[in-house]
Length: 260
Picture 1 (spheres, helix red, strand yellow):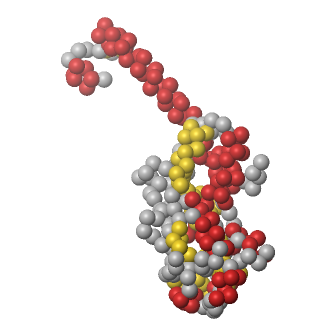
Picture 2 (cartoon, one colour; picture 1 turned 60 degrees about the vertical axis):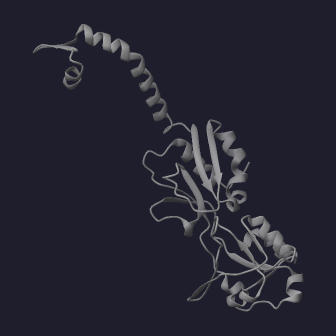
């Protein structure tokens, strides 16, 4: 307060050894500042309330291929149970920095998440499946090892603007990745499956996404002994400190198996 008095050149408080009171100038200043101080107090109260009540905006980053698995089935429940939450979703297959771009949380495969993030599992581990249509294998020999794929037509998946996924394999202590080639490059998982169904080439997909096509014979699986489980989807965010109730509510809904 003394520093403020020195800056404005006016005494704002009358001080004695027993008491402190506002001067006339101090009363005028308080009268002018009181509405602003009240507004600041109310705003701080609203912000603080977000840590206890699920309200406000949650910005979520999620790859497009994860949307039908972990997000789409839960939208209705999230809205019914927490109608005051505004879920702001950005779908992007490339990896972006949550903090610098202002996201509250992201969803991705566990192996792609930075170690310093808080992670909460949303799905069990996934297992890859190498598949193609019966018609494709009528005119092409089935690959017996991952490197055989180099002479096959394969469907490439694009993670970001220029990043093509290298197919990863593991068998015992052997690990390798293969940069495949083929007539189709997409950034949508459903297009990968449709390309395989229509005989365009061999696809690398998640086992659960094509289970019904394998069971009815529309797709054929190869290299199964080279396909080991990998971490499923997780929601991740920078820190538990001062976590909003809205983010906590989103995590609880996404973890639930109930889609009603």
